[in-house]
Length: 339
Image 1 (cartoon, helix red, strand yellow):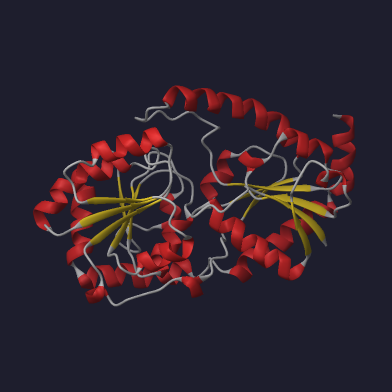
Image 2 (image 1 turned 60 degrees about the vertical axis):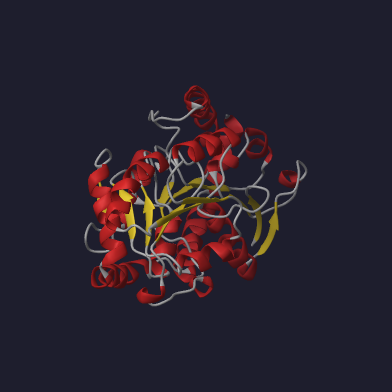
């Protein structure tokens, strides 16, 4: 098939960016794929267009397409406003309202929405939505080390520090340091300058290092140095970093929100904690830093679960979705013409 791939310009280090890179690579091996470059591309002849993230789709592009359009959705922040502490919450509130309106009209132009996880699938309202629980991770690029060779390093991986709960992790750090004095926190991710400045201020006096713009390959190598990955998000879907960390031998600790319980079974493949229970978060971190048997058990069982996130699984499911969307294309195109 001739496929137009629409995504974010430039490399994104984690999350949807990892999915973008994997999808572009694998689609190119199976189909004639072109990456969207400019306004003239939608006017060309395509069998299918695939936008890898709903928030990067514009109405002008969707309207000009003359072929079926498949879109991935990785978040649900536009569906409901969830308040949490951050400097730009008024802008987030307005952006959420804008996206609700924007997506209402975009949905009429979308022939299929791919949703990564049951939590997202149940929230979305679209006549042709598809559940896909595959990310197509390339595990060959992830290093592993034995537990004794790892540092007492805590990882926080991902941009948007305040949505992902970095202040909560910082509040837990003093309790962690009481039990493990040489513990350190490494924050990997990008954010706006004001969010980075406030995060550094909140981390003052703590053994915290911030790294912005770390290449994905270096992120993978950093997993193998650490003993635990913490993602105490305020609001979250199904983050890819959980699978990456697990496959690198790092047990994950996640807040009990959104799609997190789909990725981690508490005390089986990692730990879940309730928002606000900072003491439990700290205690779980200490356990992962000090208890080799526990950590290795969590990782072993987690890997058994995460093996489903394969390239073949992702592509087989995506091909099924493409076939279904193309089969319904004549009817959907007639509906678009009337809108």
